[in-house]
Figure (cartoon, rainbow, N blue to C red):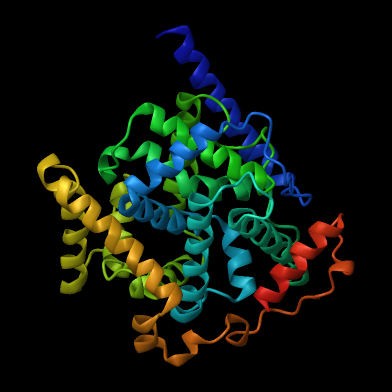
Length: 368
């Protein structure tokens, strides 16, 4: 084994230990950095955006699997349950389509300019974290949204693209992979993840090694022995997102998730429709996107179909209206009241600056 490989493996183990053992005691930085970091490489960042869009469908599936995995983390699940914003199919549709729109804005717009849509989105999401911390405190859960929780969520959005590239039929070079981790290192930094904990800081092999340890020691055990309400929240998410993609049958997608993460499937697919949708999912990744002569046609077709579906559900959610009624056309704040939380940013002890207080107030208003 080469010295460089030993160094990468040792660095990955050290980073994993730092995240899991130290990161749980350190809250996400509430003073969100607005300026891009000194190590920012615009060319690499843009390449990461292009890599995402070239593999749009597979990347979205990867991130949806990642969101399922995140629900196995008790501290994160507690916050989602306490905010009461994704506990049924309709509220989950609202929350996760909004999440997708935020993520897509980061991939689409220029992060360097403070007034860009990307920066505005980052400010709102950062404010959500501040508000979520207050909700968990008010609910008696204690402080939440730690560096560890943020990094485990970061894994959900990028980790599987590095570890399961072949299984997901993601196409790209090692330089593309370096680009996507640079992209998420930047986004993580701007959402308050310190570089000490940032999953995407370090070499490609170090990041991949850390991701492998997180999947093996955190998420695989979490799938085998999930916390209470995991299945309820996961089913709500997948059922809510059916309006975006019909392949998101709960049973089929959970079986796909278990197989992708090399975890034995706990629940056999008894329903014929679920078995059929599972085989459709596997066929798309193992055949349509894997064989080059088929991928030439089906990769752009699946990409554009997924893009259009997300856009339609954001602008004119007709499919969701057929399932949930016309309330999908009205502002989200009228849907489900959150657990009691102050909306006065001056009383938010985490908001140490005026700008942070404004972002927190924006998030609280959106969460209200």
